[in-house]
Length: 329
Image (cartoon, rainbow, N blue to C red; front, side, top):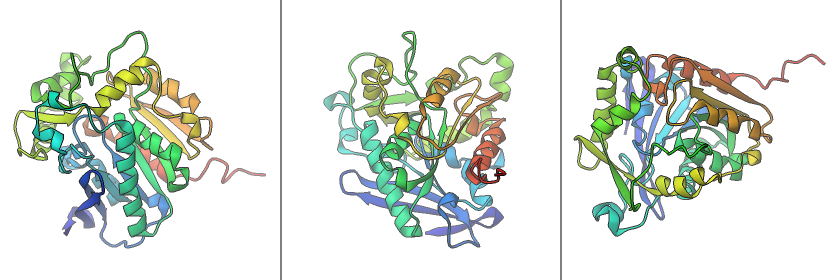
């Protein structure tokens, strides 16, 4: 059911039933006075490996990324992949982690993203839409785009995961045998979010109350409805071992033929700046592309003090004319 929100926005919770994965939860925010949206005004946000989509719509400091986009005229969506957040939990989640192999690999996730995008495009009668991926979500969105360029208007790769160098370990990993899912604690999450920050930065980059607000939203979206731990599917962990850490990409950047923005926080330890810098020149099929490194931000700059650098940079990319559009002849 749609609800009218502040600043003349409408919020709506949707569920799309996938033939293989059950109900996929989708959150929509849009301006209340607009009923028709062009492809460049429809945006779908894809989450990363562990926490679901809550970061896109938690109003830290009174404003979420979805609030920001919807208030500027965008028809904005985020989704929880199966096994995450408010979407259906596959039966593997009801058994011990070691009883089943990892599930929700990047190819499965791209299929689910495509399924949701198809429903949105049908609903809006739009041939294309814009995609924003965060972290592992960049691999999902990029894989989908590389196979369906005709369905994507523009692509944003925020904190992109790419090939790791020098034996560097992924922050999303499991020591020992990789089962169907992993358990992540609040304490471990806070430690990961503050890695590499000095004591002053720990207090200012993401204020503690903002972290707590987000964590409460993450745990509330779990079937248990709150607590100190969450569970997340391990398909991404298996892919990390077989692809990213083995020097093999999940997708071919050269197969992406839509305008693309690559952006990352300068203090990102999960997907360091070198990943974005390495990926950027490989996007040879994009008609135009941009690389933006954002000061004072980590992997979760979307919930940090400098989040407006991300919000404004992405908005500019989505709204601007192609670079040759106003060129003199």
